Image (tube, rainbow, N blue to C red; front, side, top):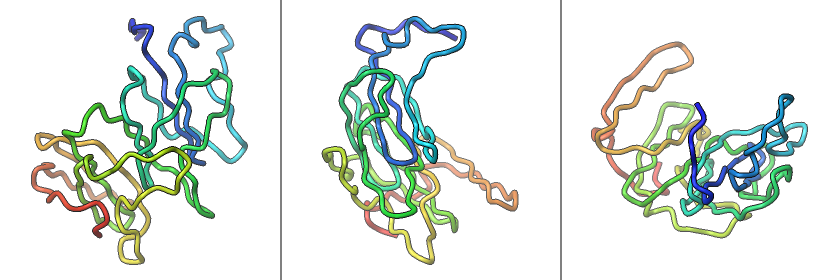
Length: 179
């Protein structure tokens, strides 16, 4: 459904290769039948997140850290939001309106935790980021990050189809760099 947004609305986009883009929503006000180019992507890159905001929210990129971006033209690829090491990918983009929520992170071997947004300090874009959760041989890589409140419930599903449902308030809030 098409909704009315103010002239101050922006579209935030993030790619797996660490590029971020903030474009005024008005740049998308006249779509063509064949579509329009929203973002230019390299061959091995793809979108991992898109959000519409008022442009005052913090954009957090995971694997590691939170980043903010500047507005640019609609067809541009974007700017480096996060520098990545060899073989690394951005797996999640979160848009936080305030610091009253927590970030729930989960690893490929079933470990997870939640951390207050206030523990993620703001940094300029283009950095390697800060530790969101220790990725070790025991934990595996980070596979997901989500904004949560104490009243939320989550469901995790393993690759073998096992489902676990739990209340967020039963997951202990831990420091940012803990396992």
